Amino acid sequence: MEPVRTCIGCRSRASRSSLLRVVAQNSDLVVDKTATLPGRGAWIHPTIACFQEAVKRRAFGRALRVSSPLDAKQLENRLTWLMDN
Image (cartoon, rainbow, N blue to C red; front, top):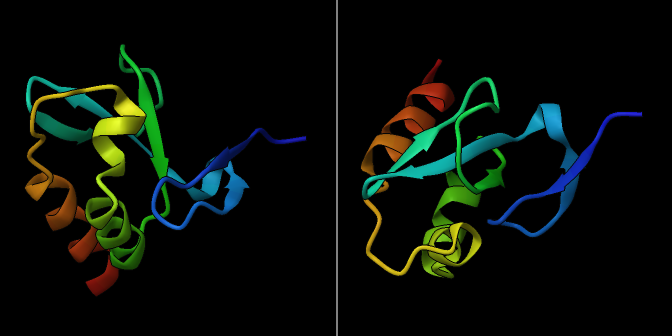
């Protein structure tokens, strides 16, 4: 049985393979493709809707336990590119 994680955007549970792991490095949100980067991770569906919901709810900072502002532009660009291709 595959591990189940909760998307921080839509709050629904899904298999780990259908979600992206995101970690905070310095003040940037970085996609962890191999799920091996150090630090606390947050899981999100690879959709713009879940990303926008997570930003609106300020879920990244809470899930990653970071009090400083996080730059989500790199993650947003990646998700936009995934949706276009």
